[in-house]
Image (cartoon, rainbow, N blue to C red; front, side, top):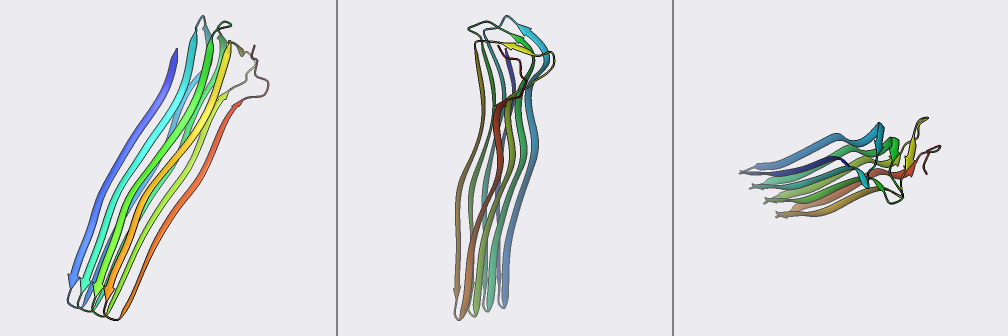
Length: 212
């Protein structure tokens, strides 16, 4: 028996802005991705018997590929900026609850896994005879709840040989940021990278579970 819920998402963005002026040149690129979802795989209030292997799996795999560039040139003042923002807010939950009867060699597996991959390349370039300003900002925010558990109930009885309960959260960040400027007098540049992770990961067997 295999109870499964899978989600695989790939987002690719390519954006850019270039401007030129004899007096004032300003170029800006802004990219925002906001993803919110709930993935559940569960066996609830079921009567299952006579199995060798049973699994309940909830899996999420999300990838962001973001490529942004901004450029500005001016005979006097030039400014260029790039802002990338990726936000994930999700729940990945797998659980088993019910009357589950196997034998001494039966295996019950409950797993929840969430994987987030951020691949970002961003750059800005500004050039002005008087002043040049460049800024590149990348923000990645992940808020996730990952739960794998065996529930409890008045009529529940789980009789198997082995139980595996596993919850996993994985975040991979590959960001390359650059800012360039050129000016005859004044110039300024800034590069900012923020990775904000708020993840709750739990694998457990509830109190009062009837497991034999």
